[in-house]
Length: 76
Image 1 (tube, rainbow, N blue to C red):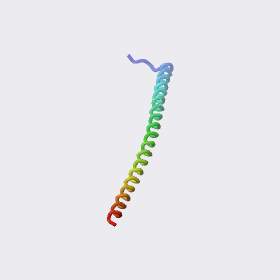
Image 2: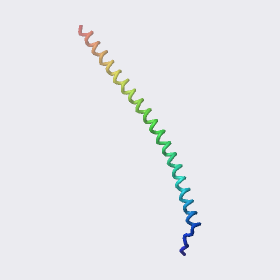
Image 3: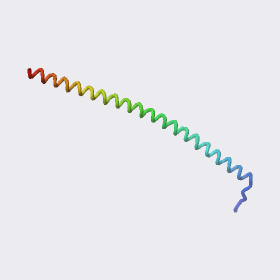
Image 4: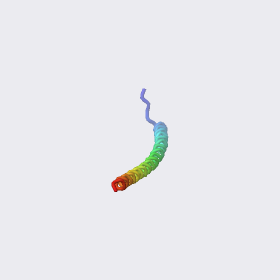
């Protein structure tokens, strides 16, 4: 059975739609907050990995210099 769309029914529907969008907005705010937190963690991880890579390169270079020094000293 079809019902007519009275002003009261349209107003009630409008309120339900507005409430639904408010709930979606709150959920997206939480998602945005989570994404910002994740980006911060990724930035920290990238920084840590860069520092570790630099440390590894310095350690390897020092080892090569030490080996070269030992080879030169041993050959004298």
